[in-house]
Length: 307
Ligand code: ARG
View 1 (cartoon, rainbow, N blue to C red):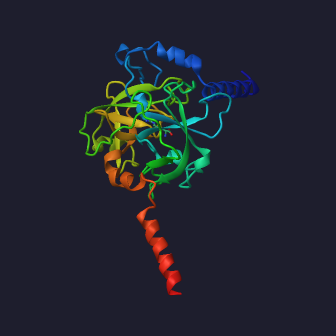
View 2 (cartoon, protein in one colour):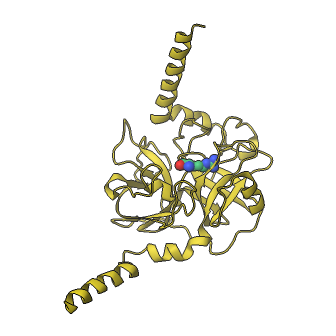
View 3 (cartoon, protein in one colour):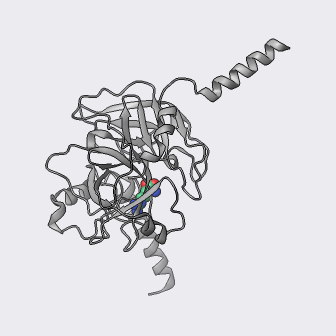
């Protein structure tokens, strides 16, 4: 084939992929929903190894974090997941709330949180669209090393929790033993660079040993753990799942953080370890003025008084 024709085909292919990815992939989602069971083994090409349970009990803890405006239709501005940890507080990844690959925070007005919507592209009567009041990311979040990839969105108004479509999740307070089987829920891409599903997908992965996690990437550090499935490398989270929950024994144990591609053989997915950040979460999840700020204010006040 002539060189020009190859370039043309490549450009055309990229456009088709972009179109699939950025419009709501409803057709993809129909294909995926024909795969009901994680055990059916039919999901080659779904990186997530994803499945939809007959009883969806976990999506109520998940929110979709979106850009301020839809591109063409409802839900096509989704970029990250998050978990409801109290009616006004969403726990997510720092890289979801910072401007691309920096430590600079996005503006609260540039983010909306959508709860009570198991189908990303369809506003249901349970859908709650929430505005953000305050964004916090870990002080030592490092976009290069991805250390401390944790952030909080404090909402302007509380989410109405009905226990069915939207509900807070408890945090895991202590270390989760190796081999524990946990579930990731999200609207992340169904394979590397593939489309985003309409309905949230589940994937079951187990907790790997730290020594294995660090043997795969030098990025592995305190506050992280890694998960996967030794028999099926396709069981993994992917982009768009970031910030979303990894749930072990019903509690929020991990935050989707990073991976090497998605579902790549012999590379697990990496998660922020919620139990390492309990104090940080408690300090930052209230609307109270933080103690550091109070002391700065007091100093200024005293300073002015002295002068
Ligand atoms: N960083 C990705 C995001 O922004 C998620 C990565 C998870 N990747 C993985 N292979 N487990 O959505």
